[in-house]
Length: 298
Image 1: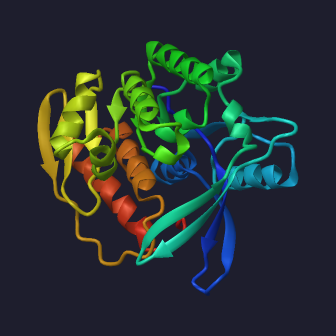
Image 2: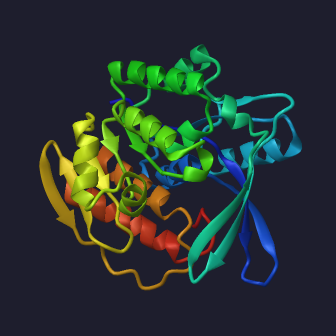
């Protein structure tokens, strides 16, 4: 396997509470970038971790690229788009749970799949390609099709594809459009990493096993259903297993809990760990993250 982890999506400016009322600290984050950032820390040094996206040509975009590079995430395949910039979101916290306000209308990342040749070059030589439902949501229908076709070519060349549905209804015109796009995209992935509470709300799944079997029926070889502090479920080539996470001592901020789980899980899997150990490593990574404020910890 090529030792290259490629994550596709949108990085944004993050305004996170500092703990002092009314004040926020500026950073950079976004679901697929968070996973790339944590994967860089979890994978051996001989693995490359690259991000695939677009940013503007403004000073904030310059700062974002510098932040990525400083964190060890490659930016060769982050295109610069004149007259565009990067999106921004603000985190609000209540008892450790977060809500978000977004400004992303002029986000350059919406054009990340506009050039099929550039996208193919970005995925060339990948050992694993990771994307999410948010990646899909920021693209128009034509560009979503371009992305899925590129993923299929990557799989044919030997890459594994991992997908987190990361269901965010506010990013879609309606629930039916989101359900259809996510279901179609999951069929192009080897590994699907849904969160049960989101899936139950959107698809009406009665249990984590129902979620897993729905995605497996669409073609996923491995489904890992995250379940907050509860038991997680895996469905691997037809075999169901339940995994009890270790107790989390302290929850400060659940931002990036799922993103960091995905990074720890995928890094352990790429390293050849057993399924039980990959779930355990993902949970341990997420536990460290939710014990501090902000998306990127440590």
